[in-house]
Image 1 (cartoon, helix red, strand yellow):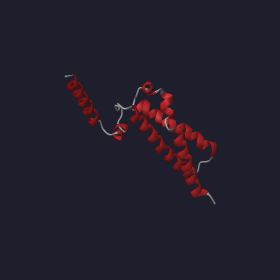
Image 2: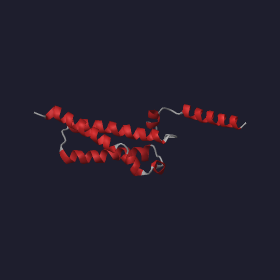
Image 3: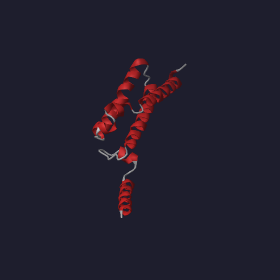
Image 4: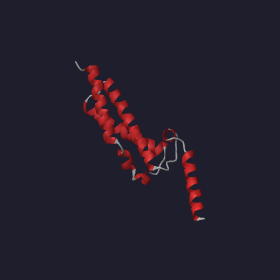
Length: 128
């Protein structure tokens, strides 16, 4: 009998997981449920990469140079994602290790990607 209870309990959990929308649908829906912590961390990581690419393109086209471009990136990128997970998703940051852990998730790789895109776009458009 214990086996049946365990089996039925596992099947109910599997049904709940199967009924969840995809990760990206949950990412675009306010106050989504995140039963797997890694799913939200993946969304934050990849969103940060997309923001890095977009800001790199914009900074290269403007053309923005120097410390101002770096400083703006360091404010906009973490700031946008902080607003996303505190206001839009309204998650409990303590479940993920605190605000700092969520804010720094994927920041350095996003920064490197931003620099590469910014340099390539700027050099392609304005280098003699």
